[in-house]
Length: 125
Image 1 (cartoon, rainbow, N blue to C red):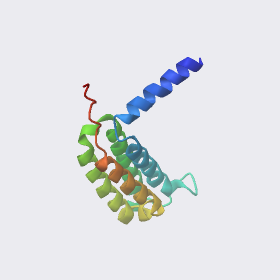
Image 2 (image 1 turned 90 degrees about the vertical axis):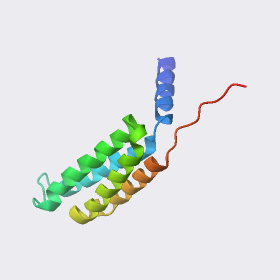
Image 3 (image 1 turned 90 degrees about the horizontal axis):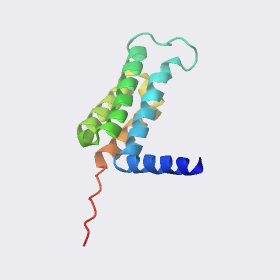
Image 4 (image 1 turned 120 degrees about the vertical axis):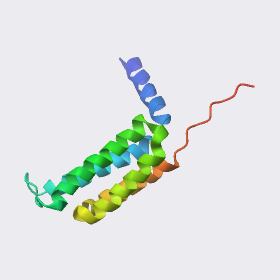
């Protein structure tokens, strides 16, 4: 059992090392924060207008950009630019971008995704 858990942890660590993992984590967290901000107080959307719907749409979009960084790291530049644009529009359209925290997480995650570079394979001498 313990050997299986170590093997699984090693496989996950190897998978995460080949992609912008932490940028994706921050983008998914920001998407969840922005999407859930309109429904924090009650089980009903507080603002049913642009702010309520934009929060759900932009939060879902940012979550998709985070998943895109994980599964298609070759497209990290496009995904990061789209995520920054969504974060800035969430600041205007959706409760100050999830009370500023969501937009800041998204910009940080997009910056990590944009700056990530794949490791060069080791050359045997």
